[in-house]
Structures are given as structure tokens and as C-alpha cells.
Image 1 (cartoon, protein in one colour):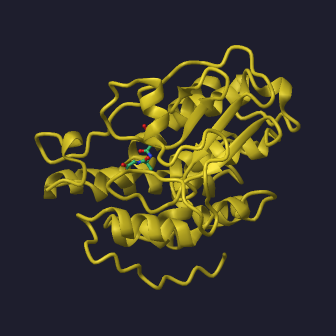
Image 2 (image 1 turned 135 degrees about the horizontal axis):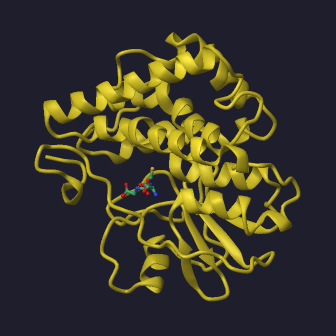
Length: 296
Ligand SMILES: N[C@@H](CCC(=O)N[C@@H](CS)C(=O)NCC(=O)O)C(=O)O
């Protein structure tokens, strides 16, 4: 049985549903937009982290859902590092989806960029959201970091796509595969790509494009930081740990220890989210006590 039966291919592969809401903010106004995030989620993490790095905290507010998603979906509850929705008073994130499209009947996902004025979801694609920070929101940013430098445009887009398919989504494709062959395909492309990235960083660095840190680095970081704690065991991505790749490990630590990053990484929520909410993979809900991450 697949974790998400509606997203299961005929060969037992995990076929992720496309993001539904892809509108673009035209004239950003401070205070009008709001981000709904789960700290455990790598996709939401990227949208939240880049918002912080650009110095958009005063412009775009944020709320954190409970990382334990039950059968009613993402919920706003008081707890360590998450809480109630102080913007719309929603109990569940599904209410935002329902208000935007009453016919929406797919998986309710994070992140969500919400328009407080129009009372609707603008966009639920982290790729678009990051591009909006770097584009339309840039004039309002306190730190206009260049997440998508013009001269890297096509090279960066190609690398981001490769990382998305093989690494960011690759770990999910391995974890949610419902056949041996689909699992092995995902496993192989994941570790082939990690090997390639290891070579790229060992031969250059410190970041993927040399001295400049761009959105693609944060995209990779959000998966790497969860890898040894969760994906290695829970998603059976166990050829090697990140700590077994010297250049990737150095890169991971360098980003983790840069200003503003560690405070966005909540291992307690990350571990509880994965080990509690994928009933098919871990019905006992026992959260592993390890591993010891010496660099955290
Ligand atoms: N927007 C992302 C996917 C976002 C996503 O799937 N987020 C997860 C959390 S990591 C989620 O909200 N899952 C809802 C669920 O598991 O029902 C993409 O298309 O690549």
C-alpha cells in the first residue's frame, strides 16, 4: 500500500501531485502577505529560510503548523515551536485551501503564501515563492541577497531542476516507492547525484557556484540537513550518510553555522513529523533516539 495512493504510478513509483496555486504577487505591500509553514517540511523550510535571509520578516508574517499531521491534515495547535493561527484564526490549513477553491480535494501542503486582503492563497509552490522574494519583494527586503544572479540563470535553473528531481524529491521517491524497482531507481539517481555534487564541491566551492551562495544551495541544504537524521533510515536512503561525503558534510556545516540558519532547523519537529505521520512506513510511531550529529 502506498503512503499516498492517489500519487502512486503503475510501477509503484511516487508521483507527486503538482502545486495547485501558482499566482504571482504583482505589487507587494508590507503586511499584506502571510506564510504558513511547517518547520519539519523541507519545501516550506526553503521558503521560510529565504524570507528570513532577505530580511523580509517585517514584510511577510509567518505561522507554524503542528508538525504532527493527523487525518484532518495540518493543524494550528500550541506546542514547542508552533502555535495558533493569529492571522485568520484557522484551526486547519485546509480552511485556507477551501476558502481559495471550494472544490480543491487533493493533498493540502505547506508552504502556503496567503493574501490577507483578498483572503486567498496566492501560491503554494516554494519555487515560485523564492522567486517572488528575489523579484517583486526585493525592494522591500532589508537584505537584498541575490538568490538568482542573472549571469547564472540557465546554469542555476538546470542544477536546481536536477537537485529537485534526484535529491529533494528523490528521497521521497525512495521512501514512498511501493515496488522494489521504483525504490531502487530513486535510490540510484539520488546517490549518483550526491556523488556528482560531492565532486563538484570538492573541486570548487565553498558553494555550488563558487563564492556566491544562491537559492540552489538552500534547496540542497534543506534536504541535506534532514538526511542523516531521517532520510537515511526512514526513507531507506542508506547507501551512505552525508557525513560519509567529506565535501558535502563540510558544505552542510558551513551553511548550518552561517547567521540565521541554525535557528530555522528544528530536529525535534523534523524527526517527530516524519516518524509520526507516515503510518505506512512507521506504524509504531517510535522516533529513533539517534543518530548523534556531532556538528549540531
Ligand atoms: N510544493 C512541494 C510539495 C510540498 C509538500 O508536499 N509538503 C509536504 C510536507 S513536507 C506536505 O505538506 N504534505 C502534506 C501531507 O503529507 O499530506 C512540491 O510540489 O514539490
